Amino acid sequence: MATERYSRHYALKGFGASGQQKLQDARVLVVGAGGLGCPALQFLAAAGVGSLGIIDHDRIELSNLQRQLLYDSEDIGLAKATVAATKLRRLNPEVSIQAYVEQIHAKNAAQYLQDYDLVLDCTDNFAARYLLCDACKLLDKPLIFGAIYQYEGQLAVFNVADAQGQKTTYRHLFPHPPGPLEAPDCNTAGVLGVLPGIIGTMQATEAIKLLAGIGTLLSNTLMTINILDNSTLTLDIPRAMPLEGNYPSSLAALKDFDYISFCGMPNAIQEISPQQLIQEWRDPDHLLIDLRNAEEMPRLPVDHLPIPLATLAAQVEKINRSRVIFICQTGKRSLAAAQFLQQQYPGRYQIVHLAGGMDALQPYLHN
Amino acid sequence: MKVHVKTFGSLTDILEKEFETSATDTADLLAVLIAQHQELANRNLLIAVNNTVVHTAVELKENDQVALMPPYSGG
Image 1: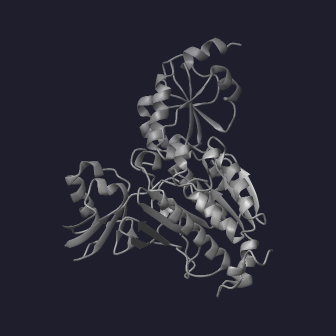
Image 2: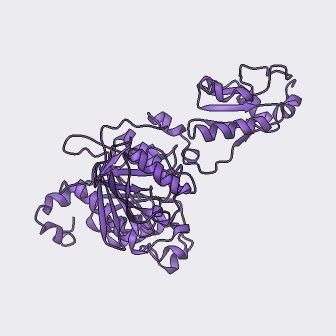
Image 3: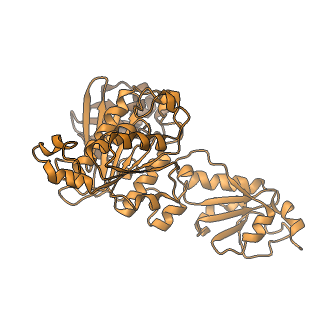
């Protein structure tokens, strides 16, 4: 470790060589290399965090440069994670940097998070925020949360025990996600460029404090900052609250959790073709549900659960598997049922419906 | 009870940033505000009373400070 590079840390009372060594030993994952991620990454790399991971699938756009200072005009169109890694290596070659040009989702989250000690939520959408909240809780990883709106920022440290040993998560603040139109993002609502600079830098600050074991963290505390009037508000998050709403309680359930529909984002109902259906309909992972009335023919030649559409709402508790295939005569009722279930129980089921219904399936039945 | 309310984020498009109103508990406060501003119905809000987040209806006392805050998604 270059002594001169970190000389101001060595000189710092309460930090010193031991604080620096703790940073050097740490592995930090920053999810999102945009407005919050850029400053967070810059300070974490400069500070000498031993290993930094960057996940972002976006490419750099001209409108990003007003606030994402890792990038310049020549980087337009390039992958953020790759460019960020290149520039951070130039800033501090002693840091080992992994760039993942990928979107984090329920299926890959645990795999990425497992390799790191600490995660920064620098994302820009609720599906990713609830995913990180749940994944970090299940893996017991500290999560440093930052979010912004126009001139205001929110900041918190989740999954880190306070003096009483209590931990909280984002779901202790917002058990249910907002509707898709309720919380506009930076694209539609605008944002003053310095705001993510401030909040992302504060996320890095909390990360460094946590790693070095100094100061008091924002655990079980939500801090909000308004940069127009310089006001701050610090809210205590209740610890003992049982989690409500729909959330995955195991890593296996996390993988199957549909965060897109959980957050009310328009998720096209997936279709299954007659050929695919015949290949998969004996798979015990799926629950095949026939929405037709008993007199509608022909009946399905495999095990299934008959629930006429009109009685679906009353019989939902019979749907005891997360993967559901809906079938009706023409594909209309199955689409309606899928939409109903997705709206009423966001995230609980992975639903597909047979396009064209029994009418489309029938020609394949006797082959 | 007279309480002081502060609003945050996109709520300031609908409500004043700070105002005083009367309510017996937090559920009553929300009902009063929704009656005045239909667009608040079904909004996902964090409610804090005297700087502590609450998830059930909490009785309000004279001069309590209530914060109403939506989730922010930007990053």
